[in-house]
Length: 324
View 1 (spheres, one colour):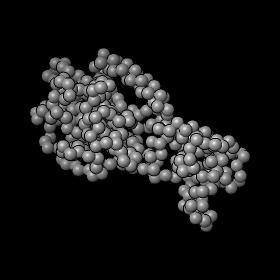
View 2: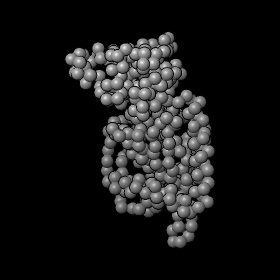
View 3: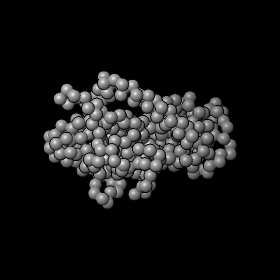
View 4: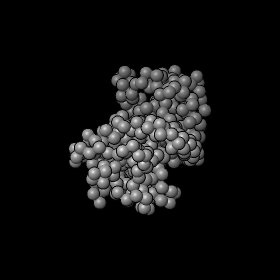
């Protein structure tokens, strides 16, 4: 394995243009009066020279990872490469080795390498323990509850103005269309429960979630506002679940809205009045149209039941607690 100092001058130059100057293959090709394929090949050779001599991955995957590290992929290709790295120990090993060598040039601009599955599980376990402690503190303090639900106030306000018809009829399937309609009535909702969702280690995705009730019409809705979410790889779609236990999760559906360029995705879904308040809300990546259990978890977080004081009497409001 080589270092940056052992590369040829042309190899170092092309990596500097890509990582330090933020140039694309096309821009470098125009600068050199060359073709894009030739420039891409030179970049691949330079990156490969920094990796192990005999990687356990093929040339196609090696070049794909090089494009990923150099920031030369579309959003969909970047998401697909990240998914491959999540599933391939050999790919992660090679990417981390090369990424470490590129760090002096790329710095924080280099993309994150996904964690090992065991690391992801440990991260979620730690997150669960930390969140549970936060929940205990919030339950013991009415002020803590007020602060928590103040954080999702904007989310509830948005839902009052625009209710996104994210989930369709019984034949729900992943879709790229978004239907927007005005809320059927100006009825102030009551927050039933809320919480924050976070991704695994290495993921910058976050979300806020709330379950609200419209008392006059006895309607319940799940609200999820997601930020920094990557576009799902081709052949998959994001799904939303209410999680109760390892063998008990209720599939809410597939969002019809698309992930924005900034990685935002807003979800508003109708819930049956008898739906119990979940322990957690999950955002997963699914590959089948009718999943029976959660797929790969992208975001998860505990929800805290809200305590309100209607008519100066403290009460805890939740949907009925029948098992889904």
